[in-house]
Image (cartoon, rainbow over all chains, first blue to last red):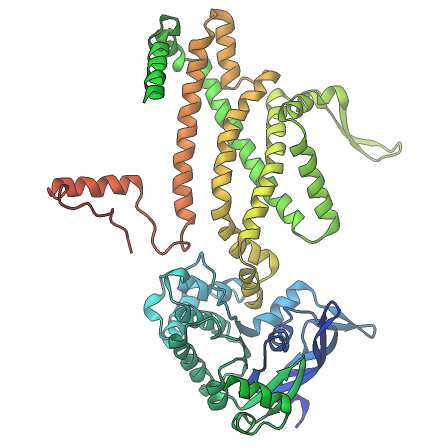
Length: 256
Length: 291
């Protein structure tokens, strides 16, 4: 497969916080329309990896490409130099991200949350941004909540708004950082349904999750990470049913 | 009860004392000199607060910028203006001309002089007052703004950045509007403090409210009634400021509560509506809320 068939390529990424290594030589690639789930114990570096992809974290070594464009850096006389803020912003706008804690703009209504970035970053008109926002809110099942404030919604509803907000930017890639970990068990399903619909519609997704059922049913590929390394990867059903590595077996047996 | 009774008795004594000269209070309450002083007090308060808030935001952003130069500059500014008495600063700016008589713009080291100003003509008493109050307020406001910005969750900035906003845009559109809610109550305090603090500039003969009444009582020898005139005006202005603060807080509370509590006016209306319908004695429920 040639390099350009991959939407996202992560090559030999290293990252440490002070002396503690968080990512050790991590490489992976995602093709267009693929859903890749990353599982692993906490502290394994999976969230950090996701945050490196849209350059919320700097890299110590390695490179990340989105459609063959280097993310976060430009080569300058044999060295990599961090991009200017305007360039970083343009690159980030091409990727959507959904956080564990939703992070909706609390002083704005649901509708204002969704139209904010299209209007400010993409310079869309209020009318067209609003029209699209209403479609997206319908799509995540919250059409009637447009004029409410985030604190008036449940966690599951907030997370679905956060997904709509990310989709409003028409991203090439969606990053999900433990999107259901802060939710009550009975409303996790609502969010997963929305994500399942997105996957079926062909959205390219990189999902850090603890939802093994979702990983098995929806993901095209599963990666298991531990101690900053990719330990095992493969077809989700196979990895989950017959893990090859001891570390994976331990982790899955503990989940019961 | 005894304390209350004594206080009422003392107040009664004061109010009815013939030396109070209520007629004098009434006579000067809306006199031209007093009203002119009042306008200047309002102007000084508004201008110095405006200057303080703008300066405060700039200093707070400098302190939080992560740049060593900007942080040191802002910290030194705050250290200097918060660490010296306001009265000293007022007198200092007033006397600036004796320290730097001329302000010259030109090429240094013997080059030609492009422009030159007489400092005495720039630093009028009113300008010195404004400068002193505004710069001092900026130092205090910057700490209030910084606390407000720090109170907004870090996730809000990240959420704005991943949507492709730049730091400045995120600060202006996402962080500051949320920080305002935290910033308003202490700023209301500052504004009330400022209103009363403007009376300090009477020492550099800026004809604000206190200076105006001082001018009057230096001629008619009735300081108490004229100080009462000034005090009543100060009370009226602080009351207006407090009411404004209440509604401003309400406005910026959008999204922070599930439902806003009714305003006193709405409470009264609801109470009156129940009274009219005769249900006052039977129902003692809380005032209506929108959600």
